[in-house]
Every structure is written in C-alpha cells, then in structure tokens.
Length: 184
Image (tube, rainbow, N blue to C red; front, side):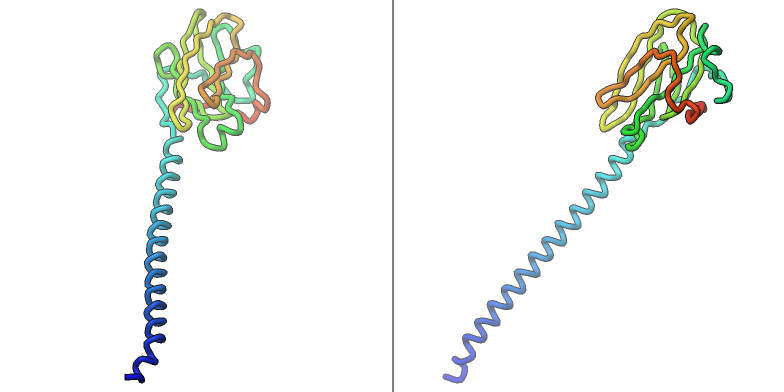
C-alpha cells in the first residue's frame, strides 16, 4: 500500500499537467477560431470596400464634339462649345472615388473619369447639372450654371463631402495629360 502512495504526488502532478495542456489546447482552438473569423471579416470588408467605390458608368444622350488633344485651343471654345473636365485630385484618384456620373438638364451626360474631358455644345441660358460620385456613400450634388458666349471651360471635381462645379474658362494644369472621354 505504501508503494502506491509514493506515486500519488506524481500522479497528481501528471493530472494537473494534463489539465493544463488540455486547457491550452482549448484556448489555442478558440484563438484559431477567432483568428479565422477575423480573417474572414477582413476579407469580406476588403471586398465590400473595393466594390463600394465602383461607380457604374451611365450612357450619354449628348453628342460629344470629337477632337484631338493637340487641337484643343481656348479660342475654339465658347459660343456654346464647352469643355467639361474632371478635376479630381490625387486623393480621389488613389482610392478610385474620382469617377463622376453627370446628368445635364435631366439627361445623362455620361461618366467622366479623372483627367478626362468632353466637349459639348450647349445653348445659351441656365443649365442644371446633377453630379454623383461614390465614396463610402453616394455623394450627390446639383448645380445651376448660366451659359453665355463667353462660357468655355467647366471644372467638376469630387470633394470629401460632395462635388464641386466651377466655371473656370482656363485649361487645368497638365492639360496635355488629359484625354478625351469616350462614350461608355
């Protein structure tokens, strides 16, 4: 009987060690499960964010005036021929939120991507622009502009909270890097 009692402390230590190892295994399993869940959430969130910034283009109902970039002169504009360009800055270009869908007088003008422009012919008078870009949410804005013989260039750009439309009548910096927007 005394022979077995000498093993009791050792058996007790083995029992405690086994319980400790078992607990570690349970904790490791829980951590692995949580890490797997975190990875799944990160992947799903990444996919959501990438797709949330994808603005589908709208088809234009306007006739674009085709031109080569070398031939665009400030003197050729005006009298109804108006250049409209996307003046998005580098922050919107980096995260792919710079694409603008534009409606002009309740008709779709189309999508203008960063560093793109279109030339259209507009009649004199007031015109209503509706602009949409997608950041985390849809950023919509409406602008009214008066077109006359001296109206030549309109800059539209996304901002953090909305969109901005300016009548500039001057080419943007690095206009030689801009390209003509194709109908999509």
